[in-house]
Image 1 (cartoon, rainbow, N blue to C red):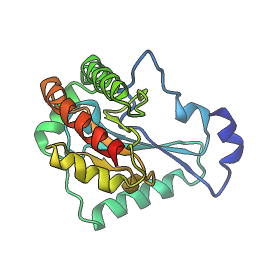
Image 2: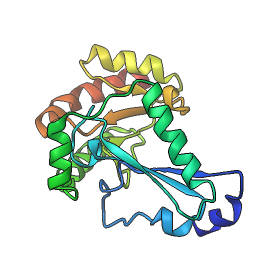
Image 3: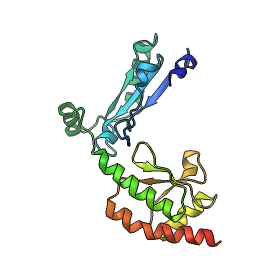
Image 4: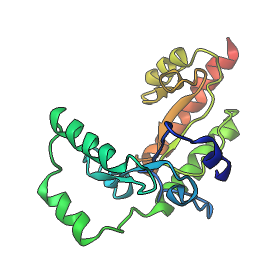
Length: 199
């Protein structure tokens, strides 16, 4: 990442979107973006760290090393107001104020990641273990990820096509469900890949 500092020069600004920063596995330590790249703005949200999906409470940290830091802060404040965003509910503002460092138990996500990836790999899926976040992104056994997502829907499994993320031929699966739900889905994943391989 240090090499990026020599590339990110005026008028370019690196925006480091870090709501998943505390959700890392296997001892991974994310780099300190603000310390490594001079022209950086960090975007943070407690919605992932505290498992408050949908609660848009966070901040922008604008590096004081940016000559345009004050005008950028004013522009962000102006955009926030005119676009009609509302303030986060008072209860979550108080939670963040009282427990700003609170995070989810990452071990629970890691256990689900390991269970799902290991099971998918044993079935023949290419399902590498992610080093962070609460999603896995396995390759679909056919090139048409949307068609394969439909096959999973027939099995009662909800997945998101990778094409929506610029990665056709992959699918995004969430680890926010329970371990029993993951276990119940596995026979469906197995049936779907067997049907795909038979075609």
